[in-house]
Image: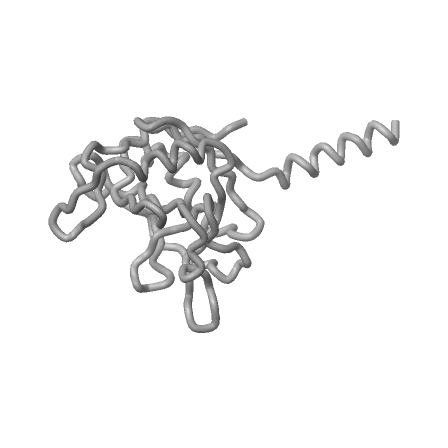
Length: 181
């Protein structure tokens, strides 16, 4: 009886601390992001609002730079910006680094301006990390499967449209987003 109770508690504890995985289906293929709720709690909660309300679906990767990153989640195929919730505080001092296959929040020059746009690092982008002289960009997850799909995005031709550069000529659309059980 005590053994069963201990096993039950151990399983409950493991499930409470298990990281959430989010599957992105795109016109280039699928990939999965594993979130780090422990080190980026505000950022992951914010990200999950967009996942849960379905508003990432129909958005595109609007900025793709080979060797640097792929950014998406904020615009539709017509390059119309999607509405956002309030910005979150920068959590870039959480110890997570902008390394290959990690996922971070995009922001403006204001460190506390991240809303819905995120990017996936193609390489170790140390200059995006927090330091005493740099507020950094909050890493909150990593691509745990399908990074080959994300890398394939970097091979598509891009264009400049207005003031925006590196836009895929053929839109890379996020068609479905689900939480993996």
